[in-house]
Length: 323
Image (cartoon, rainbow, N blue to C red; front, side):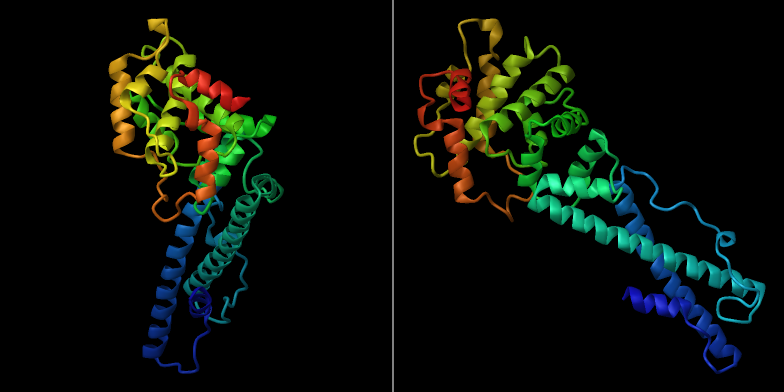
């Protein structure tokens, strides 16, 4: 379609000199150009998001395009020359945008196979700035990225991926948001990785950010961190068919209670969170079309140590899963 539109927009006049055919030819070229411009604008919007909202192309004028006095098609008035110059400019910029889109799709494919390779490819082709915020925006806004791979990358311990994860979380706002709703929003864009230490790093940062936005809800970030981990446990326990001995509301309240009343969340809040999670699973936007594989569910059950949580607090269960 694009090639056909390009040929129409740049087509030479036919051999019939009649005014009627000449006018039809100009109208056809104008329509083809309008279609190309619409496609170009859509591509420009998409690619600018991938590049951190930097303009994909500078503003161009007819003066930026060199044409001979005879016009692109040879002969014609000054108006024809300007019109043909616009056609050439738009067509060239469209080709650049199309090439950039293909390169970006290659980056997405590489990321979905191996996240570090995809990020390296982005840097090598100057698609994304070598800054944690820019990479975080790429992970958040780019269509086609594998949500499992995003979670795996965010959970890495190396300095740069860790900085990306912090930038990813800090870009979110949980102000005046209920705790369970904040977790739902947070986990909407990626799937938690299959390693306890990676989950630990991600949820610890979430708790820190949540407490910064809601400073009066918990005594400290550790309380929010332990509760966040417990919510992940509850979500897996309640909605994983491999877990047969389900956690009760009293179990959940007890495992999040400590001898120091000030150190744990109020029972009313815990009961409210329990009801919300049991009633509606925390899941990705694309979970209906791409469910977790059975081995992933089994791995998460093992990581969270759900088989032996009864009678222990969430902090104790988390500590065992880390060992």
